[in-house]
Length: 466
Image (cartoon, rainbow, N blue to C red):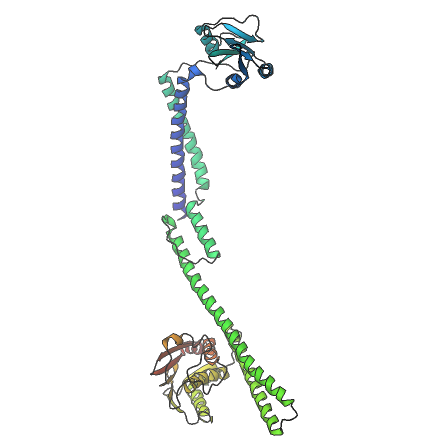
């Protein structure tokens, strides 16, 4: 690709130089012919010509005759020139600072010779017109000269062809050297690439299809891929930021409620009319609300540490069937869930993985709590240990499709809020614990049919075997 770029830009530069040479040569030849055709009028306006053409401003008509104003006389002295004003017959009717040897009558031929051919070696003549009169301005010992050129078309073509050939050879050599040195410099496509990079820097993650990508097609395709990836990351960042803000908002709200309760009961305790039994009751409420606040803060800290991968895992070799079976038995011995219908099944008695037992137990219990608490009392929960997964399934109310994406990312509680247990971060913490172990959590639910949570252990198996 490097040499392809070099060759393309070198050819481009040589082509441009070749075209410029042809155009410049045509212009040069055209100028030569134009100047040759205009030799009767002179090749350029000299300072004497400009002075003569503008001198009419210093002339006035007095008694039907032209006269020079004082400003005109001053201008003639400053320019070092003299003046003669002629009538229609070429006779001098007025003059200023005219030398003695200058004629006082001019025929048309005389004026042509003096202006065009400068047959007077001591003076340079310039002619102007004012109100039907002609005026002649002479400049002694002027550096301005007029030359008459006679051009032969054949000679012009010969010299032009030679000039054309030499210019082409020299300029092509220069262009080849310079073009080779600078052919790797990218121009318009690179500017577009730089613009795209700047757009990505400014978080403008939209894809663009260039009009003429050429050899840079792969570059623009990669930039579009980067833009798409960054756009996805930006959406994820915004999502995580919103989740963090929601967590902070909800935690703040949840803390205010027990704080208000603690404050209220503390004020009641200062009342002298409160009995001993009431004091004990108020103290129990304060203690319960304090424990809830501690649990809330602990859960919040735990989920933040898990999300930031700052939670070290104390892994131990664990038989998964015995671990889950013991957890279900402990749950059934809990007075709150003693009458619950929890079914356990496993055919992998020798299945063993390295896990953090405390965190894993909390994660699995959170999933089971969610199935029991947020459904009717007669709900059935099925816990099954397979070769590479733990499946927790219930036949409860199910989760609406619009709420399923929020189960693990926000505070989520089902419709049954009569016996809320925990802080509302349980599902998020459970998912984060599984992810911290390298596992995956998949949720499938249908309203009126129940919910199925599958915890995959493929990664655990790979870690164990290694």
